[in-house]
Image 1 (tube, rainbow, N blue to C red):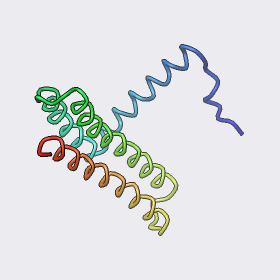
Image 2: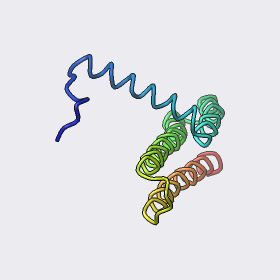
Image 3: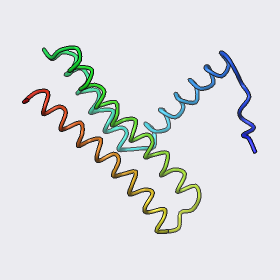
Image 4: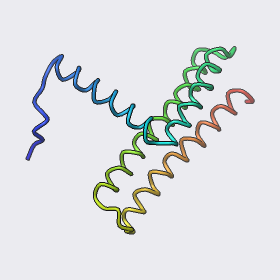
Length: 122
């Protein structure tokens, strides 16, 4: 069985994908506190990285780590939304899915910290 929402091709598909992505970013910003906090962090860290005296490759690495946190947070929020859509009951598998998503965000934050420390102190 295939989704009835599939079928667009070419530029129409690209335009639709862009609009779905924009809507997803807006929803995450509107409904997810953690995402808003991480966007604020990105608004501080990305300009700091760009204005630093580091090499282009180091700047790219610093910015990539910040963007990775946002990407993983979006995926975590998507998992949480799907789990809540299926059921709001407490269930071991729902808890496991949410905890694993949260752990992924934690690891990307620790990665960000490690990379930034190594680039600026190493």
